[in-house]
Length: 252
Image (cartoon, rainbow, N blue to C red):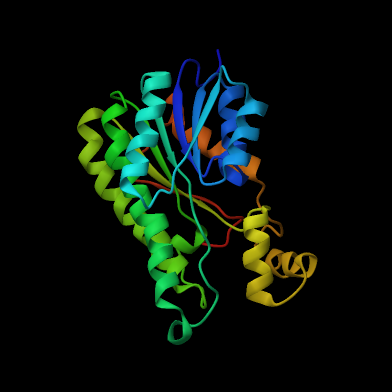
Protein backbone atom coordinates (compact mmCIF):
# COMPACT_ATOMS: atom_id res chain seq x y z
CA UNK A 1 0.00 0.00 0.00
CA UNK A 2 1.16 3.55 -0.73
CA UNK A 3 2.57 5.28 2.34
CA UNK A 4 0.05 8.14 2.27
CA UNK A 5 -2.97 6.27 0.96
CA UNK A 6 -6.14 8.37 1.48
CA UNK A 7 -4.19 11.10 3.31
CA UNK A 8 -4.67 14.81 2.66
CA UNK A 9 -1.83 17.35 2.79
CA UNK A 10 -1.77 21.15 2.83
CA UNK A 11 1.42 22.48 1.23
CA UNK A 12 2.36 26.15 1.28
CA UNK A 13 4.89 27.31 -1.27
CA UNK A 14 3.48 24.42 -3.26
CA UNK A 15 3.87 25.83 -6.77
CA UNK A 16 7.62 25.26 -7.18
CA UNK A 17 10.85 23.89 -5.72
CA UNK A 18 10.65 21.72 -2.62
CA UNK A 19 6.90 22.28 -2.29
CA UNK A 20 6.09 21.02 -5.77
CA UNK A 21 8.55 18.12 -5.53
CA UNK A 22 6.84 17.09 -2.29
CA UNK A 23 3.39 17.41 -3.84
CA UNK A 24 4.46 15.13 -6.69
CA UNK A 25 5.81 12.50 -4.30
CA UNK A 26 2.78 12.70 -2.02
CA UNK A 27 0.42 12.11 -4.94
CA UNK A 28 2.48 9.09 -6.05
CA UNK A 29 2.18 7.80 -2.48
CA UNK A 30 -1.62 8.05 -2.53
CA UNK A 31 -2.29 11.47 -1.02
CA UNK A 32 -4.45 14.35 -2.13
CA UNK A 33 -2.81 17.77 -1.91
CA UNK A 34 -4.05 21.32 -1.43
CA UNK A 35 -1.42 23.75 -2.70
CA UNK A 36 -1.15 27.30 -1.37
CA UNK A 37 1.10 29.87 -3.01
CA UNK A 38 1.34 33.35 -4.50
CA UNK A 39 1.84 32.52 -8.20
CA UNK A 40 -1.56 31.65 -9.63
CA UNK A 41 -0.19 30.52 -12.98
CA UNK A 42 2.29 28.10 -11.43
CA UNK A 43 -0.35 26.79 -9.04
CA UNK A 44 -2.70 26.08 -11.92
CA UNK A 45 0.10 24.36 -13.84
CA UNK A 46 0.89 22.21 -10.80
CA UNK A 47 -2.73 21.12 -10.45
CA UNK A 48 -2.83 20.37 -14.16
CA UNK A 49 0.25 18.18 -13.82
CA UNK A 50 -0.89 16.39 -10.67
CA UNK A 51 -4.49 15.95 -11.76
CA UNK A 52 -7.58 17.76 -10.53
CA UNK A 53 -8.85 14.61 -8.82
CA UNK A 54 -5.74 14.61 -6.61
CA UNK A 55 -4.84 18.28 -6.30
CA UNK A 56 -6.38 21.67 -5.66
CA UNK A 57 -4.87 25.11 -5.17
CA UNK A 58 -5.53 28.62 -3.91
CA UNK A 59 -3.59 31.88 -3.89
CA UNK A 60 -2.70 33.23 -0.45
CA UNK A 61 0.08 35.23 1.18
CA UNK A 62 0.94 33.36 4.39
CA UNK A 63 1.56 36.63 6.25
CA UNK A 64 -2.14 37.52 5.77
CA UNK A 65 -4.04 35.66 8.48
CA UNK A 66 -7.45 36.06 6.82
CA UNK A 67 -6.04 34.77 3.53
CA UNK A 68 -4.55 31.72 5.27
CA UNK A 69 -7.83 31.04 7.08
CA UNK A 70 -9.67 31.16 3.74
CA UNK A 71 -7.09 28.95 2.06
CA UNK A 72 -7.33 26.36 4.84
CA UNK A 73 -11.12 26.43 4.73
CA UNK A 74 -11.15 25.99 0.94
CA UNK A 75 -9.05 22.85 1.23
CA UNK A 76 -11.23 21.45 4.01
CA UNK A 77 -14.33 22.10 1.92
CA UNK A 78 -12.74 20.16 -0.95
CA UNK A 79 -10.98 17.34 0.90
CA UNK A 80 -12.60 17.19 4.35
CA UNK A 81 -9.50 17.45 6.58
CA UNK A 82 -5.69 17.58 6.60
CA UNK A 83 -3.57 14.68 7.78
CA UNK A 84 -0.40 16.65 7.01
CA UNK A 85 0.41 20.35 7.18
CA UNK A 86 3.60 21.24 5.31
CA UNK A 87 4.54 24.86 6.00
CA UNK A 88 7.07 25.51 3.26
CA UNK A 89 6.56 29.07 1.97
CA UNK A 90 9.65 31.24 2.17
CA UNK A 91 11.64 34.18 0.88
CA UNK A 92 15.40 34.76 1.03
CA UNK A 93 15.55 38.35 2.22
CA UNK A 94 18.56 40.56 1.57
CA UNK A 95 22.27 39.75 1.56
CA UNK A 96 23.96 42.39 3.72
CA UNK A 97 25.67 42.85 7.07
CA UNK A 98 23.39 43.74 9.97
CA UNK A 99 24.44 47.39 10.03
CA UNK A 100 23.35 47.78 6.39
CA UNK A 101 20.36 45.41 6.40
CA UNK A 102 17.06 47.09 5.39
CA UNK A 103 14.70 46.89 8.36
CA UNK A 104 11.59 46.50 6.21
CA UNK A 105 13.09 43.46 4.45
CA UNK A 106 14.16 42.04 7.82
CA UNK A 107 10.59 42.34 9.12
CA UNK A 108 9.08 40.89 5.95
CA UNK A 109 11.45 37.90 6.03
CA UNK A 110 10.51 37.08 9.63
CA UNK A 111 6.83 37.54 8.80
CA UNK A 112 6.85 35.09 5.89
CA UNK A 113 8.71 32.38 7.76
CA UNK A 114 7.61 32.68 11.38
CA UNK A 115 4.24 34.40 11.20
CA UNK A 116 3.40 32.37 8.09
CA UNK A 117 4.12 29.06 9.83
CA UNK A 118 2.19 30.28 12.88
CA UNK A 119 -0.85 31.04 10.71
CA UNK A 120 -0.69 27.63 9.05
CA UNK A 121 -0.56 25.84 12.40
CA UNK A 122 -3.15 28.09 14.06
CA UNK A 123 -5.76 27.62 11.35
CA UNK A 124 -4.72 24.19 10.06
CA UNK A 125 -4.21 22.19 13.26
CA UNK A 126 -7.91 22.15 14.21
CA UNK A 127 -8.54 20.25 10.96
CA UNK A 128 -5.81 17.64 11.57
CA UNK A 129 -7.05 14.36 13.09
CA UNK A 130 -5.25 12.85 16.04
CA UNK A 131 -2.01 11.21 14.91
CA UNK A 132 -1.35 13.67 12.10
CA UNK A 133 1.87 15.46 11.19
CA UNK A 134 3.06 19.05 10.83
CA UNK A 135 6.33 19.78 9.04
CA UNK A 136 7.99 23.20 8.77
CA UNK A 137 10.73 23.86 6.24
CA UNK A 138 13.52 25.59 8.12
CA UNK A 139 17.07 25.48 6.76
CA UNK A 140 20.64 24.58 7.61
CA UNK A 141 20.78 28.26 8.59
CA UNK A 142 18.25 27.45 11.30
CA UNK A 143 21.05 25.50 13.00
CA UNK A 144 24.08 27.68 12.21
CA UNK A 145 24.72 31.42 11.78
CA UNK A 146 26.43 32.44 8.54
CA UNK A 147 27.11 36.18 8.04
CA UNK A 148 25.13 38.49 5.74
CA UNK A 149 21.85 36.58 6.12
CA UNK A 150 20.66 37.88 9.50
CA UNK A 151 16.93 37.95 8.71
CA UNK A 152 16.88 34.53 7.06
CA UNK A 153 18.95 33.02 9.88
CA UNK A 154 16.78 34.60 12.58
CA UNK A 155 13.61 33.48 10.82
CA UNK A 156 14.81 29.91 10.41
CA UNK A 157 15.89 29.72 14.06
CA UNK A 158 12.53 31.20 15.04
CA UNK A 159 10.70 28.43 13.23
CA UNK A 160 12.49 25.90 15.43
CA UNK A 161 11.18 27.61 18.56
CA UNK A 162 7.66 27.68 17.15
CA UNK A 163 7.93 24.00 16.26
CA UNK A 164 9.00 23.00 19.75
CA UNK A 165 6.10 24.83 21.39
CA UNK A 166 3.59 23.42 18.89
CA UNK A 167 4.98 19.91 19.41
CA UNK A 168 4.30 20.16 23.14
CA UNK A 169 0.86 21.69 22.71
CA UNK A 170 -0.29 19.07 20.20
CA UNK A 171 1.33 16.02 21.81
CA UNK A 172 -1.86 15.06 23.63
CA UNK A 173 -3.44 14.52 20.20
CA UNK A 174 -0.39 12.57 18.98
CA UNK A 175 0.22 15.19 16.29
CA UNK A 176 3.94 15.34 15.54
CA UNK A 177 5.57 18.66 14.75
CA UNK A 178 9.07 18.78 13.26
CA UNK A 179 11.35 21.09 11.31
CA UNK A 180 13.25 20.17 8.17
CA UNK A 181 16.70 21.66 7.60
CA UNK A 182 17.86 21.40 3.98
CA UNK A 183 21.27 22.65 2.99
CA UNK A 184 21.79 24.34 -0.39
CA UNK A 185 19.20 22.78 -2.68
CA UNK A 186 19.27 22.88 -6.47
CA UNK A 187 16.40 25.32 -7.11
CA UNK A 188 16.10 28.78 -8.72
CA UNK A 189 15.45 30.12 -5.18
CA UNK A 190 18.87 28.89 -4.07
CA UNK A 191 20.55 29.99 -7.31
CA UNK A 192 19.42 33.56 -6.61
CA UNK A 193 20.77 33.48 -3.05
CA UNK A 194 24.12 32.11 -4.17
CA UNK A 195 24.62 34.58 -7.00
CA UNK A 196 23.82 37.52 -4.72
CA UNK A 197 26.04 36.17 -1.95
CA UNK A 198 29.06 35.59 -4.20
CA UNK A 199 28.60 38.08 -7.02
CA UNK A 200 29.38 35.25 -9.43
CA UNK A 201 27.53 33.50 -12.25
CA UNK A 202 25.10 30.73 -11.35
CA UNK A 203 27.56 28.03 -12.36
CA UNK A 204 30.48 29.50 -10.40
CA UNK A 205 28.33 30.37 -7.38
CA UNK A 206 27.04 26.80 -7.30
CA UNK A 207 30.61 25.50 -7.40
CA UNK A 208 31.59 27.76 -4.50
CA UNK A 209 28.67 26.52 -2.40
CA UNK A 210 29.45 22.90 -3.30
CA UNK A 211 32.80 23.54 -1.68
CA UNK A 212 31.08 24.40 1.62
CA UNK A 213 29.21 21.09 1.73
CA UNK A 214 31.15 18.13 3.17
CA UNK A 215 29.42 15.70 0.79
CA UNK A 216 30.39 17.99 -2.07
CA UNK A 217 27.12 18.73 -3.84
CA UNK A 218 23.75 20.41 -3.56
CA UNK A 219 20.72 18.51 -2.30
CA UNK A 220 17.92 17.92 -4.82
CA UNK A 221 14.31 18.92 -4.17
CA UNK A 222 13.36 15.27 -4.56
CA UNK A 223 15.73 14.24 -1.77
CA UNK A 224 14.14 16.81 0.52
CA UNK A 225 10.68 15.60 -0.51
CA UNK A 226 11.54 12.08 0.64
CA UNK A 227 12.44 13.47 4.06
CA UNK A 228 9.08 15.25 4.21
CA UNK A 229 7.43 11.96 3.26
CA UNK A 230 9.12 10.22 6.19
CA UNK A 231 7.91 12.86 8.63
CA UNK A 232 4.41 12.72 7.14
CA UNK A 233 4.08 8.94 7.10
CA UNK A 234 3.29 6.51 9.90
CA UNK A 235 6.95 5.41 10.13
CA UNK A 236 7.67 8.62 12.06
CA UNK A 237 4.88 8.11 14.60
CA UNK A 238 7.33 8.62 17.50
CA UNK A 239 9.31 11.48 15.96
CA UNK A 240 8.35 14.92 17.23
CA UNK A 241 10.08 18.16 18.27
CA UNK A 242 12.93 17.10 15.99
CA UNK A 243 15.25 19.06 13.67
CA UNK A 244 15.95 16.85 10.67
CA UNK A 245 19.01 17.93 8.68
CA UNK A 246 19.44 17.18 4.98
CA UNK A 247 22.50 19.31 4.42
CA UNK A 248 25.37 17.04 3.36
CA UNK A 249 27.06 17.62 6.69
CA UNK A 250 27.10 21.44 6.75
CA UNK A 251 25.65 21.71 10.26
CA UNK A 252 27.70 18.89 11.72
